[in-house]
Image (cartoon, rainbow over all chains, first blue to last red; front, side, top):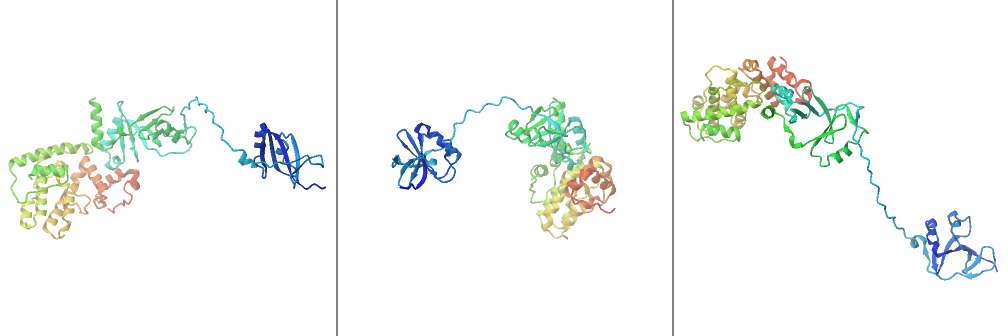
Length: 243
Length: 207
């Protein structure tokens, strides 16, 4: 009698079920459970077995012929017939379950906003100056130079002017990025985090945050700005003078 | 609607109604109008550059009456050239910076009135009369393509009037009014280095 081997069959302890995970993606493998024995079949007889299959904790390995006779690998005599079992493909048998995420650790270290000298020349959008300088300019300034501007005055008689072109008066100029006003000549370090800083510090994007070179900032409500005009500027000065 | 109410509505709402008949203004009506004009002046100077000229009640009242009558004549088309000459009397006092600014409180609506009169024939006596007045009061008539015939020297000599005149020229893109050297210089100074942004198609006139 000649053997007509078609595949290899392995027996594994049923409690080693999880080890099949390593060969789950190999094609053609089928598995079935019979009491405390886990059967694995579909392993090609020809060619070199996959290393992952060789690493499986098999208790017995058989060669299976076309009549379902099981031969020990080192014997020409069959020792049993393969039972009719409920075979399943490994992907069907071994369902994937996503691991439960552990609670992520909280990052306790806070990022300190830092500014560094800018590498490129930037267009300025705002000017911080004194109320006196602003009033003196507006007294005789052309209307067309005032119309594109808005301004907000502080109790300290400082004025933040926004718009373009800015008036030619002394003061500190600022660059506008995502409603953040950075001193001209500076940018965030690292560069490109303006939108992150804005999202954290000014999520509603309603107000303006004005930074100094040290990275500290002050919030200026958008409602504090009024349209620049000679009467508005004169009235502001009068109100400040009268307390 | 009497004259003082007419001025109040004109300034606050930009809409006016006039009496359907020509009546003489009573002394009380004129006095009330001066009070309204004085309040209007006090508000308006807040937007004037530098120190605005003083309030000239005579010029302000004359311009108020002039505009009122002009609106009446535009509405009451049965009135002819004789009534136009009788009702739209020219200003007969010496003209100063205060006169120009006082009259401007109401004459600044002259371009709007001329615009409303576009439906009339260009040869209409009222239109020709209004255009002649616009020439004589250049401070109040920018942007309607009418050349100035007088008063420019007074405007130029008053810094507040000059800057306001230049503001109006720029706002209405009235290149024709830049044909006087001091005015042109003031326009260029106002635009500064931003002429291409503030008045993109501005071309220097040949003087």
